[in-house]
Image (cartoon, rainbow, N blue to C red; front, side, top):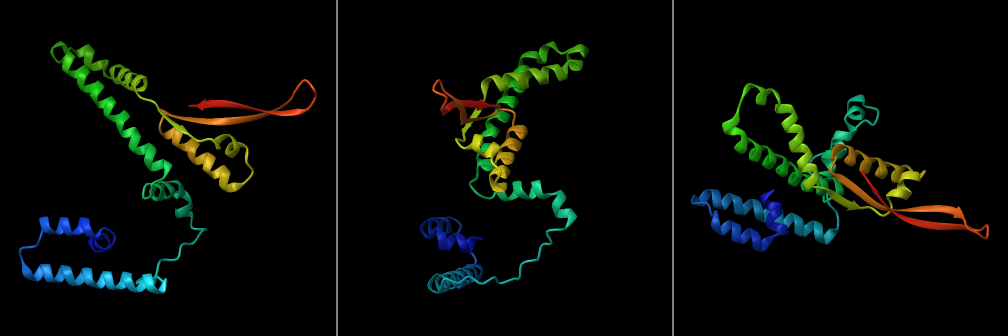
Length: 202
């Protein structure tokens, strides 16, 4: 990983290396040798345009029941590794979680000196109230103009994108989707006319 960062972010690597320069000369030499090997490999593949795998990838059987059962988890895992909508929404939802924790901490600080048996039994209702306060303070709106078309599309890829966004809304209740909806209706002259509506879905 370090060698890849060296090749991609050379200046940042040099600054980083200056701060953590190994005191042991042998370990420093070993690290520099590894970097040089990676750099020469990268330069060679850049010239030829061919990248070869140093290890053979395992073959995945699409009929494997284990994989089928966990396809949603695998899809999320892959989405979190790129700058996708899933990753962006998850990052923004950390703010909502922070608000929940802040509400709980504030409530505990105020009620610390008023603790009774009944207040402990009412803990669930207090937690529900904290969630409600976080909901009031935080809503995340994503603009997805083609969501309406994806919803009615017969194309498998578009339908899958619609379902992925729907799953995100189910996973994160504070998420809202804004999109443009097209409705075809006859006008006064009997001609079909498209009307566009701005829609907010939760």
